[in-house]
Length: 584
Image 1 (cartoon, rainbow, N blue to C red):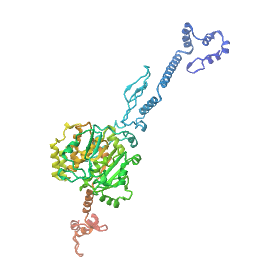
Image 2: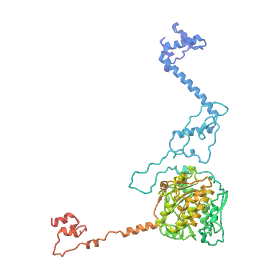
Image 3: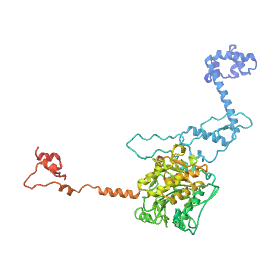
Image 4: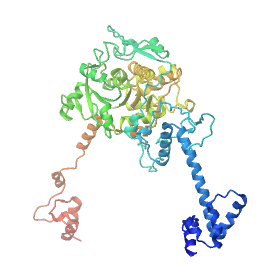
């Protein structure tokens, strides 16, 4: 009897096992009530009796646990059946997308490269029975109700949650300073490059004037290099149309760099035409700056981006003696291009040619990053392009001046600093005032400034941006070389006709990816001043002491008042030694 009882309750959690037939045949009558467990409980009276019998046998606590297990097993079975049906109805792409969402939800760090999608490619709609978060829409098929996947937050840019910290509270440090900028890794930034050019509003085709037999006509302003556009042609160039032909430098010659007044070797021109991705360019004319090598450049940028430094013959001669420039024409990452037959006498005005007309020197490049010769690039160019162009769908970006926002104030500052002759600056300002130039005010918002810093230009080479830099260059060619004065006039004239704007970011953000050095002349002046300020030689210091005859000793105090002998080894080298030998 005892053996039969143990055999029936050998399972865990109080579960009852069915005994074998041989054992039941030898059991005494009191245990015959267990025999019906081998047959189905089809009768209602049998089903009503089974629960009290189990309770009497196993106890109420264990019965509750048994019922809980049965209910859990039923729920798990139901979920398994439903999930199999969903897996059969959903395609493999849907399951992979859901897995990616889960991975992104779990991993709060920067998403992997394959999770990035270029901002200009719309996500494909998936007609499946789950929620597609990229479009915030829910699509179902065949009117069948499915269990929706958990709704996770949509994919965000890694820098969306970034906020600039407040400026430091140290009031002793004045003047401009860099501020933090959120970049994505360089390899991921390269993947975010738009696969196709951005749309150019209104303007679709842009061509340029070229004439072989140009005659000098300085009475209307400008130069042969600029083509001497008349005021009528200038005003017509601001009338934006679908197809336009404008003056844009290189007016004389077959193509830019060949007999145009900004002449470049044919081999260099062919190499420049092969740059079809990103161009980083700078220039040093008149040996005015010291070449700065870029830093923190990724291997991808070293292989795919072009780094070009334009120099004149004077700068080339200096570089061959100082920086190790050889026949390979490379100094670090920079490929140096020697420019001959410069169009202007002023070296700074010559620098405006590559600065504003890179799209003509690199006709196949998609993007360009211009930095002045005094600047050192300390961030990857793809990171800079992603941050200031691609992230917000801009096609041109330039930093605003850190202090001045008004063109009239900028003109006065240039006059005070002697950047250009005052009469020319006044003439240009009066000309713009007659065209409607007004001081900057809050009524111009969302335009944040009328004065750019100008030493960095980030640009996508599309017709509308090429037109802007062409017309900006024409103003520099006609008036003064101070491009900050003419910037807002060209910008406002174009923006008044087309839906286009410029990303004028903060100057502290610019100082985050370029480090500003001094011009060569200022560095040489500092060296000259340092050489002039020298301590007096020891002989002059000794001559100041009035020496007494050997037979006569001067008191120590008088000797100290007239001068000290500071030579090591002398008794007067130490004040105590001098005082000990003299009058107290």
